[in-house]
Length: 304
Image (cartoon, rainbow, N blue to C red):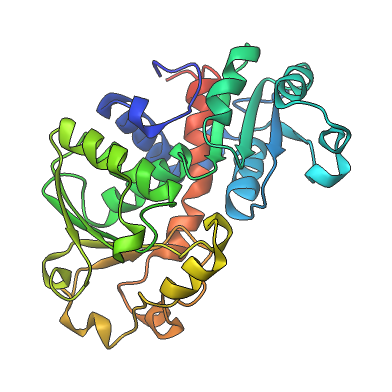
């Protein structure tokens, strides 16, 4: 790859994305061929926010490549509680690992951290900013189910605070994709994101209702209304539960519609959808392992 660090989907060119997705496909086809690729390699995990899928899949990915992890553990049991700065912490953990994965509540934290380390650093989510590795596994899932060119995708839910949304929208500007954004007015895409997408020449349209666009979609990407991101709980209550889908909703959809979700879900996708051919979100989560294996392999200098 051309990148030393993975901080933002904005910095990923189509060739970078395809290199990761192609390597992930090769790994999925023959995982045993990669099982000792990085024996002796240590990946440092630094999660300042809760995580299930991202943290566990990075751990599984490193171990399936023959390496291992060192985990900072919960913030409340670390030296962060003593007032240690992020800059000092990454400098210390860098000495224990060959690459770092950082999740932090502050937007821009991962970019700042790269100024203090010489090993590859991967942004696993920085507040409402970016989540580029989620985007890579999302793109892998989309490519496997609908293809990435001549694509019509609807992205629904929390578009204001959703870092998975921002990352995916930026990455899709590399492909022939028509993007439709469905949200309450209060959770529309941030102005700077809309500006960047327009500047990149992306075809985007904004909607407040799903039904007007649903029949034309190849992919519906549903996101959770993120209570923890709202500065005012009353603002959250006004929109919580407003955008939900069930099998009745999907009656108007194409038979080939792929329904995705970065998870965790709350009530935005009813469980009856799980039994339909549309549901792809659990496979999407499982795809995190081969995709993150591929990314680590390329960042750490894996041979062809």
